[in-house]
Length: 400
Image (tube, rainbow, N blue to C red; front, side, top):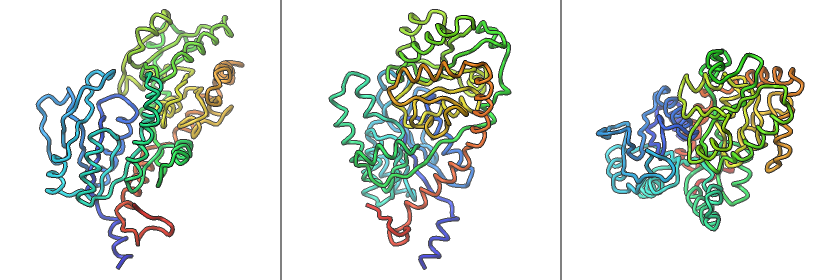
């Protein structure tokens, strides 16, 4: 009987509720990942109900069977975004009418907490995702005393779900050390057709003031304090000092609260603002060297996007960079917090000139094998395994 049930579970379509504070068309790594996962699940025939706060873009949009909109508060520092309020009773009403087989909670705020509580009352299995290092962000924003409290809350939250999906081995090891339980890997993919070197635009590069042999030093991401952008500035200035005979231009794609300060520090840099879709892919392809100094990422989708576009990436040895960059082959890595090593790694990529060409070619070849279909398949597997009763789990596996 158990074998028959397992066979049905492995082939039948699922009813999944996915709860998140952020989702496309919002621009950030979490939204991008969740959009890919939802599209992938729906393409495989699963019913996915998206639960998220109402945003400015929704106007008078109403909830339906595929989308449940909840109330939210404005999120400081993120114009236009809403932080979800508790929606316990709304979720209970919805899930009593049409019960999901499993929940995936991507964010741990009040909306996610109310979903966790509703699932507990209704006996619905829950899988959670660890998408953002909020416990590190508290230190960057001058509230370091909250770091321990935030870590305690996140541990409490995730340990009450059947499993927590994390994007990298380094993240898994760090969270296990902090007492997080039942962690499983779910890496990230990249659209290798969208992010591709063939999108390189000589016209856009000329707008930046660059000829074919000049170097576009690119950074893509939110311009905020937690992204360690002071090191971006220092790295670019070191490159200029090391290679005064070469024309280098710093290109920043993205927006955020540090933009005005960076524009004052970098009057010759090009600030492109937020870019989406094919325009974003074109900006990537027009770069040569990608500098990513962040130490607060759970993954860092932009690293894979840059590799797919054929850029030489320098980053710290963690998250996506640790997983996908092989130093000296398809990029350069520095040990965490080793600023001197980071800057030297960036300089190494430009000397001799053949190094940059070889690394960029290898970067593209590696990223081309990192598509989303396999990630969606693994996500589906994790959701199905959370539904199985304890007696049908693999040996040694228990559920709370």
